[in-house]
Image (cartoon, rainbow, N blue to C red; front, side):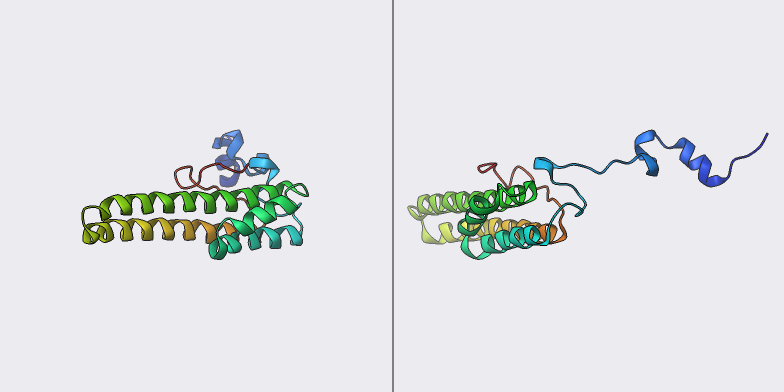
Length: 156
């Protein structure tokens, strides 16, 4: 009985989808691929600018990028919509914190501050984390999967 080399044995045991030669690039939402082969540098710069604008000016810059560049490429549409959705969701969470703080303020300012400040800070840090990760992914020409609990699909 002839024995196969170790590399052929391990390949034979892998299912078809895990074999290196049978992998197909993953196509994400709106035609965004994991690789940067079909993404232009200008698109990556504009998408990164949308995320960074969302950090400093809220949903204004991502919505402008979305309105001006969304029709030019699926990559731009995906990242501009994601940045706009993250910033709009963060604004909605902020409004909810203000409402909660106003209701708690009717009882005591101390209770309102003790509850609302940590909740607001946690929301802000979470949004900031995903906006920075999105800017990095857009700059590399990749997609970013944002969890649904932190990013409502408002703009698509």
